[in-house]
Length: 357
Image 1: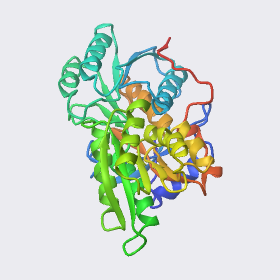
Image 2: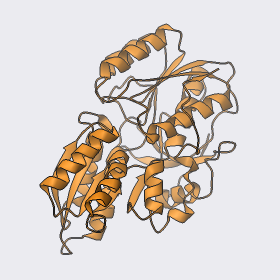
Image 3: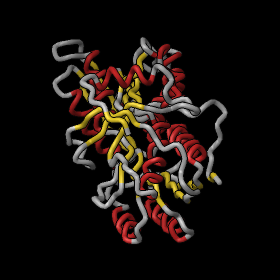
């Protein structure tokens, strides 16, 4: 890989996302951040131009495990892993557990994948700590394990392709705090970080809470829940009933998407504004239509692509980045027209791919 150090990480990331580097036929080199020592989000980081292998030396079998495929966020990751598997010439089997309450299902599916002959495993984890035993078992068999998107605490992981969801929450919170700084106009906000216990959710909550501290934002509710649309819609409805003077709904992409029709039906579109702390097609449309103020993007497609490349590099004994993730930036109504979504969203009409031969 070609390594370059940049002092303008955020600016560089925006430039890349807006110049189409993530196009399927030429997504690389893509500028990411590399943590060293790895597996610690507090470690120093540098900018890296990530260039994957041209092709794998053989059709390795890679197992990919997701928490669910309920929303378009994971569809973007699915697009990334499946397209990179095709480009590299490896096989891929994707399993999804059905939701963040299904930790045992995810563990069982991964065990089945390994038993069926997986050479490497890529995991989008349901739980930060709950998969550590299975990771240890897999690594004991000499099989690489890549941590993608959500984060796991196991020190035995082979590599990570992910960003700091603490920073994702911080980006959303900082955007909100910028609208209502200390001494400015007070406003009431409700925060919907996602399913309790998931590593990305706890990190996001810490980042968001820290970012609004000292601002004129009054955080009146924090409501955890599964990222199914029905679950989030119920949380939004309950919160609006309890706080008729609410000014902001901030939370998962599913929360933001669910809130739009609810606010419209209640005649609250002008009173209650919406911010997401990650990016999906629904959030993209919401920003373009003026229904959502902003959302940070973590270049989901790229994370999926890199995870597959990391797995192949490790299997082939080649140099690899142990801990990388795209630099974050916030897409707003002002800069949305310049944003190239190919780094983050699956193309229109893309259907889930569970098997690549």
